[in-house]
Image 1 (cartoon, rainbow, N blue to C red):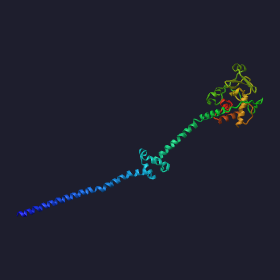
Image 2 (cartoon, rainbow, N blue to C red):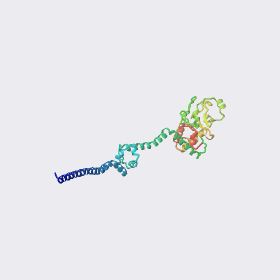
Image 3 (cartoon, helix red, strand yellow):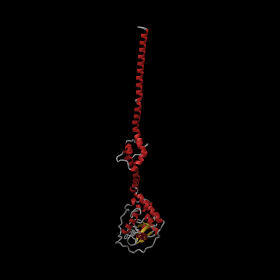
Image 4 (cartoon, helix red, strand yellow):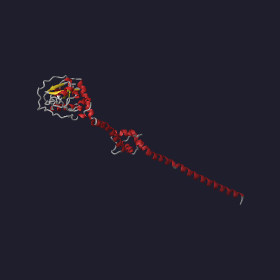
Length: 312
């Protein structure tokens, strides 16, 4: 083969190699370009798709949308509710948008109901266990008001003989105590708690008590601010009541009773005659007044009752 022919053959071979290399590099470049171009459209799509769940609740919470907010809140944990959704939750109950049976709405309502019921329960304890205390406070207020307007004692011309039809005599019972007096607390009721009926002759009464008065022929002795029936001093003596009578302004028992009857008449509690007898009608009127003014219902003339009436 001639030199010229060999040279041509070499040039063709070289050209083929160059073309092959060019084609190889071109194909490789096209593949690289395709790989680089493919993720470009997919990456924004993935970002947009991934951001949708995150952006949805946040956007709904920011706008405060009624139903979407309720739906989101129903799936939140308590910790999440205390965060960004707190503002929306506060608005929800006011607008009345919380659906029935929703855990958050129901829980919030129960908490509010519980808090609202606590003062009422407290009010209920003051009404149940504190009823007696409330009456005592009311009685003290009435007594304080009465002290500012004292009533001067009067002298009443009571009948000389008792009307035993309206005030029948009580029978003596040795060591008899006043029923219910054990529940009357306070020093001002000590005379009623400690009282018991005793029968003694005239000499015994004079040797133990130096102040004895007679009302309707019956003797009463004075002790520590109260008048008491002196049972046995006169075995046939008449008593309409067996118990202490507060010694109001040093008046004898019949005048104390008459002043109380007059005061209760003015207030509409007593409709009977001012006769100086602590009979059933008078005792019923006294009990009604005591009940209405928060006092113990002693049905008798005690110091707190006279203070409430403005007489002591």
